Image (cartoon, rainbow, N blue to C red):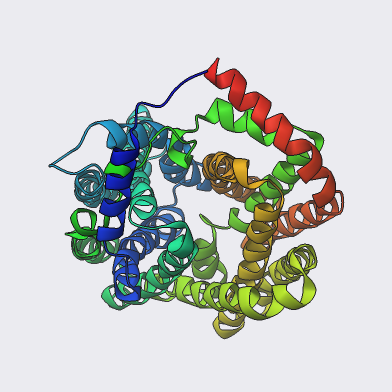
Length: 478
């Protein structure tokens, strides 16, 4: 039997040191949330501006656009390495903050290079698809992969920082505040970007679009980097409990993709619930790369107007997240709340298609508010249910495994949306039908997820999954 080398005196010393470290107050929680706000703002540039410009203005095939953008999600497994690095190798004198700052600087810089490659790709397409065009497309995919690496380098240590500065009694509140700020960032990012792009008319020449978009990609990443600094400077030094905690736990940043798949298929119930979450993610995010082009091609909206669509979706999502936790889930229960959300998402996706038949921009905006609300209900219900579907001893492992797998599922959803749009444009007669095919398939996938949810059994999960996951973790340690 292993014995501990820690003496009672040292334990007492650590306890005293822990009580001497102040707890994070609500103001600091919101301050930390500025990092997530920055990520929300940056997401608007890739999935709110560049996708529209490439598909609609530059006529880059949707599958190429979606595939390139999704590369920043496909490299998500590298966050395992950054998590381990931040545990063992301090950067700029800090275990977490140094990685956050360097990663934020890199994703701000790389985003500007990405848009320069976008122009070259679009201009080379004007004379048809050539070897040079293929080279630019490959370079764009590589740059988005580097962008994803930079995001991982900052976001994973930041997630670890949230663990370091919190205790069990205030961690859920901290996480709730910080992650809500992500949606606030999406809304603010959409409004700022729309304002900076309002000078671009519907038929503006490419030279004008290039000047305005370049200006956007200089200003907004700079704002995001400043927010990352403001969020974290001084926090780790004042609040971190890292030095008195063991790092040998199975946190999210310790879990490899292979281990995640083992955990998520450990028993019949884990496999069922994982498949449900996979289908749910595919349904919620297939429109990521095609929504703004839909607004441009079918509704004849300007780049500024389609960028602002994210604000309508984000507002609906924020309301959905808030009301579900406080009003809907306590009354209906977590599983019924998730079912309600799935049905509402499917209905909203059909309404988005119907909006296209009117070409009325206001109709689309309201349908996106409803879609965002339904997405918030579904997400909150599903995540709450997931917390019930495992024992406390393995909750961190299961959530970490899902977090890694979800990033890959989102990447697959983005690519699938572009692929379906390409297929629709080649087979169907009008843009509305092509885009409608994407939203209709999303609705069908969500109904399949709903059907699978009926097979989820909380009692069976808690009875069998704990032992199955524990066996996997033991084999990983052997």
